[in-house]
Image (cartoon, rainbow, N blue to C red; front, top):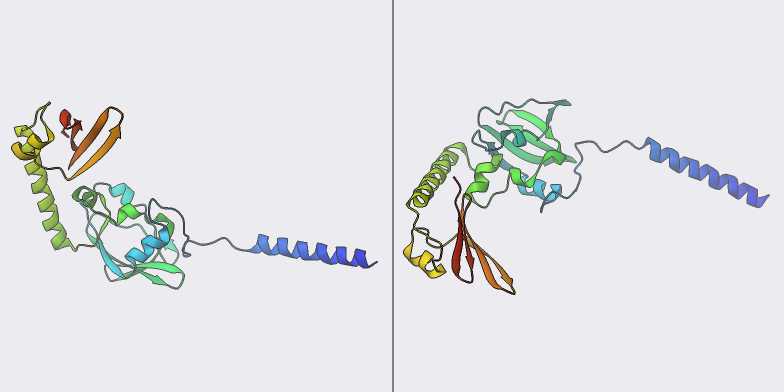
Length: 219
């Protein structure tokens, strides 16, 4: 009799737990979900942009990629006009991530549509590809002009040549208009050392044991 009563109580508790699980609503877009997103999690991205002003610039190299961010106003998804520069201020409010657009429109952001490369840059090339810049439009325009001048100078350097197969690393550094690279990637093998000299914008020199063996120029 006692065992029968315990069994009935256990069955009742199991059914109650199952009912609670079935009735629990799924998480909505306004809740911050931490998932892997390249090096940064969504939570880390939100911490990075929280309380800061960003501008969307029409010069972005990947406009379709930038439009992946979902903005909602009063429960309806907004169609953002990305043809003109827009100002966004991202901030937390309770469990939600919000953005004020042009200091006028309050929206809720779907955090799962945010990606690191939309905000983070460390090189000129990455800056041209980001969606939201922390540099206001006037300074952004100046920066774009500076980047274009650097590209033009590099293009002129490529036209001049200046390097040839068989040169030593020292000769390239000291006696050519290529000069020193932005960075060097080295690989050590049983046959010696191979190096990739990175000059930016798709231009590279490749050395084997200190001797230039190939040139890669972006056209």
